[in-house]
Length: 292
View 1 (cartoon, rainbow, N blue to C red):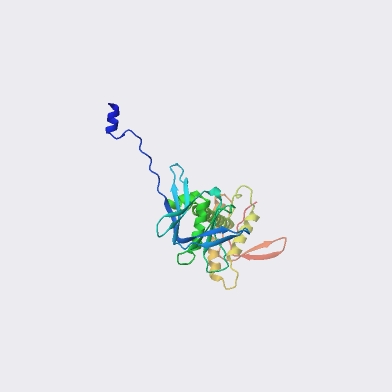
View 2 (spheres, rainbow, N blue to C red; view 1 turned 90 degrees about the vertical axis):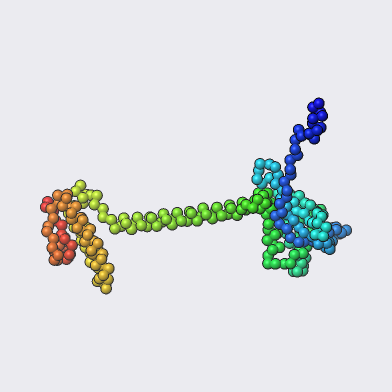
């Protein structure tokens, strides 16, 4: 009974076969194959096959969970019959190379596919496409890249960015970010230095850190800086003098709040006598004195 039901259902309980992935063509260009025959002297006689053909570089993704797991094949197809004549499976460990052959004639466009150092596994091809720019060399670079790294072939088959290109781009971005950070740090450091140079340190006032003589020197220095150089820079020196005058007023207010008496200031010229040097200097900055 059960056997009859299974027969009627046509083996419905059988497990369906898994569908194989279809190959993805990465590169395709017109090229003829060449036949290499070894001579008695050990050299090879290479002759062109007259058939018109196409070289196809195909990638077949495997069922493995790894995105770079698959199979790379370079196949030569007869363009007239559409039949695949040569199918070469390539793995990175095969150490295959694809390079142009120097025939002694600049017009020849002959390339060699070589399996490592195995002389018996070498395949010659001659280009049949019309030569345009550096297309031959570009195809050569791509084929070598796909043969050496399965991840590159898988990325190209899936329409993704080349891993090597992404890595190079990331490195450049990191370097650029590092340079910007260094520039910003340098700018911040320079700005901080400028601000520090124009900032007045009054941390010692009222605590014995500065005496009256030191305060006089500060006041004198502020005034001298704002007095101008007398060489036609009156406008710039006037602006500087105004800024420095504001600092003098601030310092005077601080001294007053600290309980240090000040001599009334006027806009005229005051005289300050240095007893040790017996010299007299004039200053337009307000004089600050304190009783002993």
